[in-house]
Length: 240
Image (cartoon, rainbow, N blue to C red; front, side, top):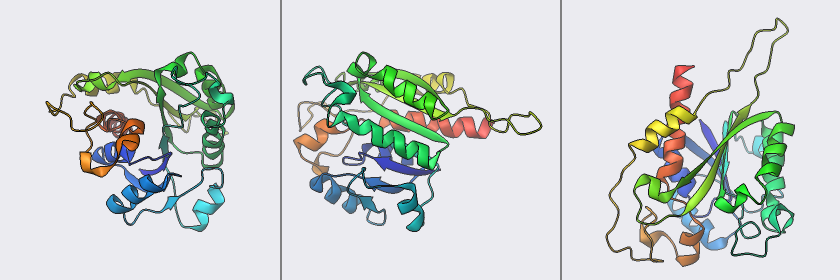
């Protein structure tokens, strides 16, 4: 399962998905500090600096095939701490580039992460875009506390996959997996050891503190959640 990691940050998404057996084949990250972190830990994986310039043709030219896309697009215009521009904002509006790449690449799976405020500030638009692209989607509110972390960090996670396509004989050629039960089972047993006194930001993110600075940690995710999602996807592939 080859993964394109968009809005990669310091690689929390890829860290979790690779633990589940997937493989990151490309990053897309604009922040130079985060680019250096990614280059240190994934030296052989290319990193594209601008999601607006990234296309399916560019990836194909570079010999990169993609089975899944993951990423948490910018939340600044969605978060209640911001000005509430939503997906019309300059930064959170980069969701349109994410959706464009989904349409160009047609991956088997898409995993999207954003702040819980997305439920009231744009989830309807995201789901509409998935439907327009002929993707089914399910979403879950999963907080860091659900995997045993000593802080909340509540987030919305969306898992999408192509709608069932029928052959000329009328037989379904693609079965949409039902991931909710498997994801719930995995999250239900996901309990990890966390630091008693986190050294950075007052929270423990499950990422080694020497990887990054405060801003990068604040924008990152707890890798254990995409790991659980990745394991649910890999299990569904085995069972179908």
